[in-house]
Image 1 (cartoon, rainbow, N blue to C red):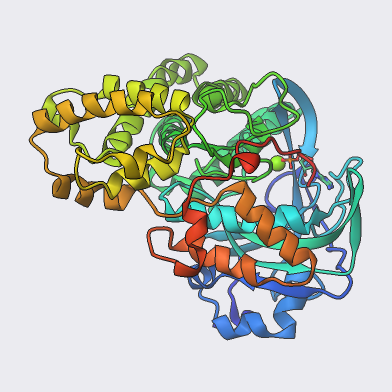
Image 2 (image 1 turned 180 degrees about the vertical axis):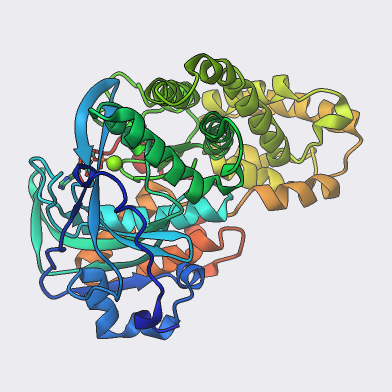
Length: 484
Ligand code: AMP
Ligand code: MG
């Protein structure tokens, strides 16, 4: 389909006018296409050739508005690092409407009513990170927003000590409603009416099977609890750390949103913190499931005008068990095991592995890829030599061997299972940094190459074999700043 033929729905304007702002983008100077994503084009039915046109560039830049699109920003609130901030909002994001159930949003399109002291911009560095990472997450089966295109420009913004070029990323989500949106609505003077409209909207977008059900708002909450338990389990299984799990960065559709100082863990460290400003480790790797549970509790409280809060809290008791179940199932797959055969979840083996990975200083995801390719227990060097210290892993392999014998599984059986769970490539922050540095010099090829790797992580990418190796120690588990 041509860009001009996309059918855009605007479906938010029945909310109270104080809950959003209709506005125009402030376009960037000399916009330049960095990359576009064919998979995302397919999702909204857009012809790839359209992305090579000047009109497309103008569309991303906000100087061209599609027919029927009425750009707007939304207000929300949120708990940031545990503290309630009564008003936040799309400070640099503009919603363009919904195409084929995907809500399009440009990030970095200029100041809005909700920008507070911010400039409404997103620097190229942060846009590249979000663009590639959301695709990497999707390819691993982790629920996430997607990204369709990214532009660079000759407009500059100040971040920390540097002047950086501004960019815009066109991202898309089944919903941009956040837990923080409910927190804001719950604090309005006609909270009950606003919350009802918002909950109906979320049900329409993300839980349409509940539309005609009794107690549909409670059921919406239960479904979100289930989805969030699954999302968190997948994060933990692949060592993903979000970095800023504030309630305003938590989606009502149960997908990963708002990529900031995230990381896929390099070497395993259960207390790993990827966000430089998170000095207390509130959002450390190990805390993530508990923070997600806390965020859902905040939501339960915000819904009390339209739900029986006690029922919601009661359902919350299923969150950690659901999370653990999915986590263990997936970790078994990463080990090529079938826990049902040994009659337990292999919890002990998995816990022992995490300890061994940590004390051996082993690259977390590279370990699983190495294990997938192991052909015998006689020679473990192809895996063990990747670690800094050998003994903890050698000891763990003794336990693993016993479980494999108990399950009567062969190397071939296990390989079949592991091949689908353990990609050759995981997008690490140092790779993104390589792409960003090249892009700053005007060369966007590595952005496109990393996009290809992110979307096909199980394939061979001969030219980039170095990215399948353990992260060089000097780049491993580095904390990133929030500035973006
Ligand atoms: P984040 O931590 O990126 O999710 O942002 C938290 C809040 O700050 C959100 O309401 C953002 O819209 C807003 N924000 C972040 N950066 C900027 C910026 N450069 N200009 C305006 N608002 C911003
Ligand atoms: Mg945010």
